[in-house]
Length: 234
Image (cartoon, rainbow, N blue to C red; front, side, top):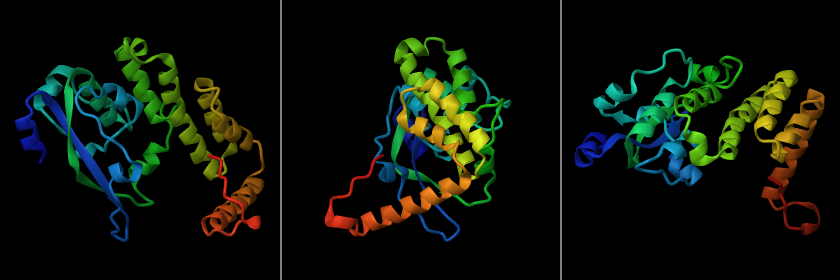
């Protein structure tokens, strides 16, 4: 599907598509587009791609001449060399999209990419390292989208890593990650709450999670006390 697409659209240098995921049971999830209600962009997609990773690398087909212009993959990156490359290509070329799942991605608990994605590189999440490299390569980006957008984008990987550390009860590293997230996005209230949560004992947080889980189940079953309408704060 993608090679004919490129043949029919000579103005596009790269084409990507939707993807589905499946687990050890062979269950195929709905596509990323359906699950998250995403409208995937075409053409000049650099800024949307900068804000979100958008697509899996297995869904990409690239014209060879792209690499002649932007160079090879950055092999210094333990994780994220693909995302860094797609950003370079999107910065220099128009990108197309095939509105079909073109990739089936298996997920399981022992997958190496999952563990690598949770590792810090140069003391930062891999996405932050990639985006920092891209910002250094293309200094005009802040003028195009503003530092507010950039800082919010940089904050998200730190917060995600903070959640990862919090789940394994590593509160010291979780606190460090949420602190860095707040430096980029100080007005984000949820980051502030999770930062404060890192000062609580793991046993206390576990109890809160259990209570919250029961509450959510009761609300979903329509059993909350007093018959009032459920209100869930995001």
